[in-house]
Amino acid sequence: MAVVPVSPQDSMTGYVLDFLAYLEFERGLSRNTLEAYRSDLLQFGAFLTRGAVGVLEAQHAQLAGWMDELAAGTGEKPPAAPATLQRKAACLRSFYRHLRRDGVIEHDPTADLRSPRKSQKLPQVLSRDEVAMLLRAPAGDDPSSLRDRALLELMYACGLRASEAIDLEVSDVDLAAGALRARGKGSKERMVPVGREAVAAARSYLGRGRPQLVGPRDERHLFVNHRGGRLTRQGLYKIVQRHATTVGLESRMSPHTLRHTFATHLLAGGCDLRSLQEMLGHADIATTQIYTHLSAERLKDVYFRAHPRATQDGG
Image (cartoon, rainbow, N blue to C red; front, side, top):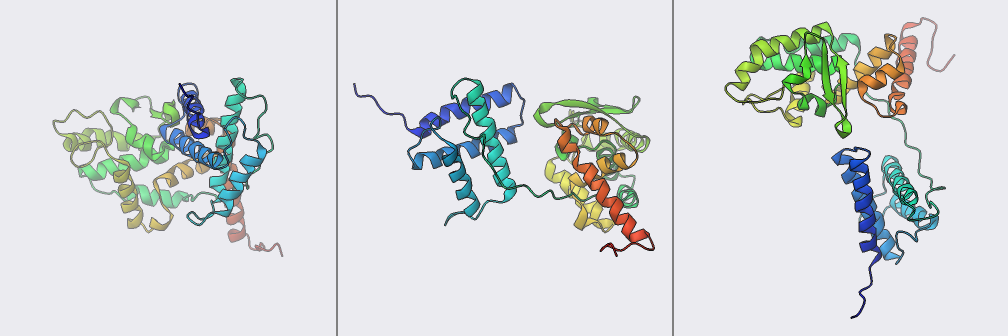
């Protein structure tokens, strides 16, 4: 019987599936991250196939060639952004390090792989007065207003991601203890303190708002829509934007803005970086350190606007 040769792409698929299983079960990465890695690696595999090179035979020249092709773009695709190139390079490094750990390859071809530096764009942050305006925007006592106020208060009080807010269950919030359990990336849980104002807003919503929205339904999620079902990400976005528009902040707001603002205000108030890392649920403190740069930029801005003898050009 004739032996059917295995194509480089078929060989690549097997190693990719093994790598993704490692990321999911041993490192607990999120489904979105796994899908991004899968897409990047299969795209790289297609590039290798064009040159009839197997995944285990790929050297620095092939890896750099793929990155150069992405950076230059093709007739069908525009040049990749620096952030995209950074992600794809990180994906290759993680993949080949995994192969070397497993003894599949002897030398890591990504050792000298370079990619463009990702420009660090500082996130939008609200001032204390702007936050206060936003949190006052849902002013009514109807069920939807009580829900919106509790949602905004908890997102700011606890630095919640949008996905964490909509994933909250009633049992995750302990108002007596002033704490909640958030489920972050990779299903990792963390406990976050809840401030007095957020506790009061959540108590009003649970007592007078949510029961009317939910009605007879058996719904475990804390935040629900007007039909009593779980609030979606799109629904949360609309709530945030509606109230931001009311107070003139629509051009500076997204659900993540409250998380950035939470972190920056805590640092400005004297919170240490390690504690902030825990409250944000960051796996790497390097991710948290962007807020130290942000705080420094805000201090400079306040200084140049407020000091009578300061000028932006240093004169």
